[in-house]
Structures are given as C-alpha cells and as structure tokens.
Length: 230
Image 1 (cartoon, rainbow, N blue to C red):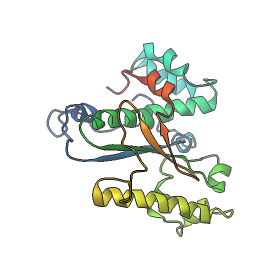
Image 2: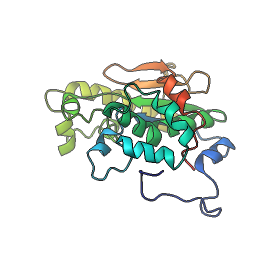
Image 3: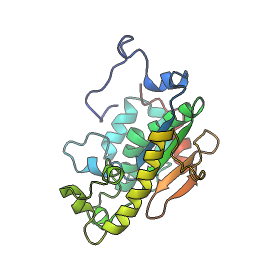
C-alpha cells in the first residue's frame, strides 16, 4: 500500500501462490478455527514515528487512494466525522491497515469455518495520558499478563493494575479456551457468539467486556469493495 510498509510478501505463484484473502475465499483454511481482532487505536503509535509506517496524515491518505482506488476516496473519507481532522485521519490509517482487512478476512473465513472477532478497547490511566490509547500491540501485555516488565509497570501505573489484571484474566481465559478447544467460550456456555457476514458479532474487551453487533457498520460498508490491497 503506498505510504505504508516499504516491503512485504509478494505473490509469486510459487512460494506464495495467491493472495491470502483469495486463498481464504476459496476455502483453503477449512478445518482450522479462527480468532482474529484489532485494537481501537491502532494508528496512534505510528503517528509518533518519523516517518510513519502507515498513513497518518491527509497527504498520505490522498496518495494512498490516488495510487490505488481514487473513486473510493470521497465515499470513504465522508464516513469519518470531521475528516481531515487528526482523529479521522488516524481512523482511516487504522482501518486501511488493520481493521478492514481483518473484517474481510473474518467474513471470508466464516463461510467455511468457525470464526470469532474481537476489538481491544481497554485503556489504563497511563494509556490515556500518553494519548496512545489502545494502540497497536497494546493488547499483548494483557494477553500474556506481563505487567511486571518495565513496560507493563508503566502502563499499569496510577493505580491501574487491579483493573488491568481483571481484563487480562478474562482475555487469557478466552485465549486458553480457544487454544485447548478451538472455541474461546467457557465450557459452561456461550458468551461470545461466532462471527458471520450477517451479524458481525464482535467481543469488545474493555473495563467491562461486551458483545457488539456489527460495530462501526457505516465505516465497514464504506470500505466495501475498495480496490486498495492489490
């Protein structure tokens, strides 16, 4: 993607015979359950990089569409409140790079196999103060509960550790259930419904977890069919 990562896997017909999404759409992953998701504020980390690895300003957003699918630019930017203000720009960078590809992947996967989608929204006091929020990779200390590391101590400062541990315990329970049984739900019953193209059920990990049906639906629809990834 222009204005994004400088290199990546190349479809060569041999080592990588087809685009991953096309392979999924043809059913090649049948028999392997999927747990997939992204973070609410993926792009804020990249906004602090120089140069950023993903589109984080209006000029980069314009270049991205200009070199891929110019006709989609107006439709998509109109789906973000107050574009080209910073929050909207970061939302487009987040969705172009992380969220929308994950949604398309989950949609295709769910046609053949059990699929669960999540979004990590939780922010400790330090995550809010830093203005990073639930940025890229921020779910990792919660999934592995590495709060005794230097970084873990930093993000759970200001008295946030007890609440962060509760979020971590719930996430770990789902991750372990999925690893053991191919299903993130506890043995006693379903609290996390499967993802499909009709309902788009998504687990939101936050101070209190909840299921949301088709979060950010209008944004998802605005991106539908955009030719930005080839």
